[in-house]
Length: 159
Ligand SMILES: [Mg+2]
Image (cartoon, rainbow, N blue to C red; front, side, top):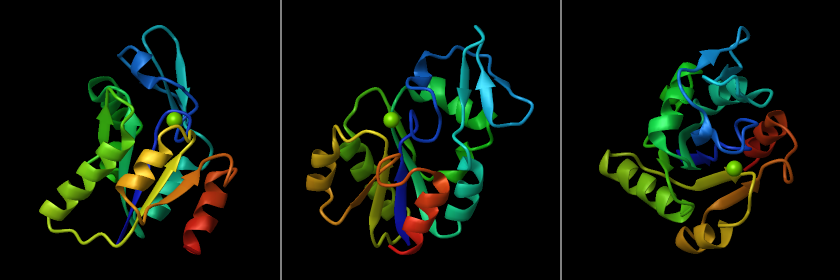
């Protein structure tokens, strides 16, 4: 199976720094976002939940996010998304290459065979490092290479 690594801020949801949100989190009535203790909102982009449901049958799903897990895991849990991901990395630095490499090592140690890595992010700042570290990785620039999760699905279908 291929590993599909997703960024969070600006990729899965509209907030640019989810670590800034303060618990407790209230899930909106449509289940598509949370409101924090101060009324600040974080909303999933359209189609995320359907996309993850589709993708979990086809890929190993993981996360590489520059955030703090202690703050952001509760948001993923509140939205019911945490369990989609294997060995997610949510860490207080932007070294995505290191995060993805360690997820690969964790998967290998757990007995998974990974035959390719796809990485989806709304920003390209660390892509060179990631591609250098994992040569056969395929990068998809969210909102540029694809404009929606429906388009992302279509692109992944032909990879
Ligand atoms: Mg981002």
